Image (cartoon, rainbow, N blue to C red; front, side, top):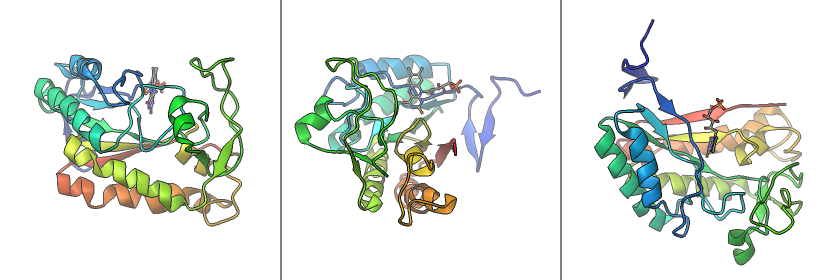
Length: 243
Ligand SMILES: Cc1cc2nc3c(=O)[nH]c(=O)nc-3n(C[C@H](O)[C@H](O)[C@H](O)COP(=O)(O)O)c2cc1C
């Protein structure tokens, strides 16, 4: 039986120094305009030093958002520079560690009264106007749940472009790869599930149509150009599909 600390080759030749992988964990520590700070550098370098073979960084928003974590990271141009400091320190202490970026759009799991959305007037985009149950916005008065105020995405290609843009910034941020989260009740999951996607266009209805946003649009973009040019290793994907 393989030992935990033995190296392993993942997929098409991605070498991991051991079999310990750290899952993505939102830490809500990006207090400088949603850029990672020294707290993030310490968090990841502590775990990379003689530890994991692969770390998936915390979910990082591709656009303005109103998720429950006001200090989770965003990936815009300025933020890429801040991430570069984190990846540089992680690679320094972790030798051949693989550090993965996770582009995130929370879809209907948002509240439009969270500061970033409220100040900008940016809407809560989802495939359809079907509010999500639950949610607990501890920083908002009255601890409301997820919003009812959803704007149906008119042209999904606009959001795909936001994914592409944030992924293109991983080049200068020096991430080693990408994990596209398609679970958790977030946007990609919203498109996949028939209860949150009631569209009648080519992005809703049949399983093939509900998969279109992810498979026909997002993945080819993630796999093309930017990552390969940067010499990065891969685009990983996590999909849990429920009916
Ligand atoms: C505090 C916390 C934050 C998390 N943030 C993320 C996240 O940003 N992205 C993600 O895909 N999963 C996130 N998760 C889920 C963890 O990655 C997941 O629970 C972990 O890999 C363990 O997997 P398991 O629950 O299947 O055992 C988070 C979990 C915790 C406890």
